[in-house]
Amino acid sequence: MRRRFPALVAAVIAAMVAVLLGPNTASAATWPVIANGDSGAQVTTIQHLLNHRGYAIAADGQFGPATEAKVSAFQSASGLTADGSVGPLTWPKLVATVQNGSTGNAAKAAQTQLNRYGYGLVVDGDFGTASTNAAKDFQSKHGLTADGIVGPNTWNALVGGSGSGGGGTSRAQLAASIDANSRISLLTYHVSGVVDADSTAQANITDTKNGTTAETSNYSDVGEREVWLSTAMLNGMLKLATERGYTFLVTEIAGGDHSSNSNHYKGIAFDADNMSVSNATFVSACRAYGATEALDEGNHVHCAWQ
Image (tube, rainbow, N blue to C red; front, top):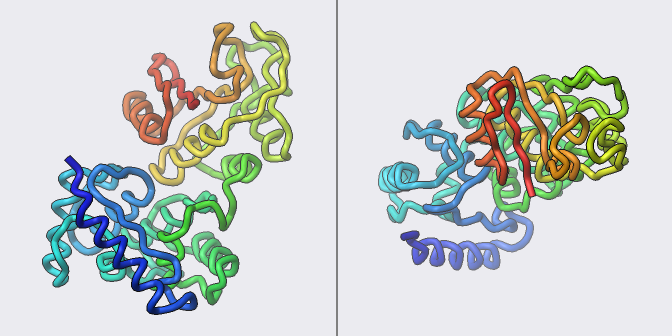
């Protein structure tokens, strides 16, 4: 059972602090309350920061009993109430200043947060030029001093925001980030061997990046159709590279020849091959990022979102 009473108290405290300190402080964006049962990038950030503080935990994005225990231990050592949830009193003690040249788990945490805003960084713990420029851009767009240093005010804006701003998470912006990501390769031909250059994985992403629909293959069961690629699928694809650090080849998205009711033809599925991890691990990661269909097909993995 999830313990929500401490989290509720923390949320009330956050709101009171924001009012007392006013809109021009780091607390203007309320620190979120993350607790047992939560999942996603906010949890991954906490886990990276716990590792930075010496509390070893797998950064899997799942806030379960193990993460709750590590948070409680950190809180006890920091003179906080050990309720196991990360709220407005715990976040400021947990975050660490990250800047150009920083390495390690705190840098991974900052990169994870910047990716919530569509910056498409590789979460490698090396806070170099790309990460610094992303931080500067985020700061500029959120009324902060654009120095590229992720300090208390920037941390507050990052974790307290919805993740909808910054580099952007529109369909076109996600496709552009995918196209630019060195860990994601896009096939420029069809595995079937049939030539239809307008519907390859690369063509699908290029069209989407340019703000247009993607094409299904003219030789497929449904013929040539124009479909919008799912932002949920694109986001999941990108996070497999930026948050998990996987390298992989996308062999088909909307194109290719599949069963007549295939999710590929709806623009919500992609096939991957040549992964840097096992098929089973890749399938599990797809599901962690919201895939409702993730299948190990032997010679490739198929992942689809609704």
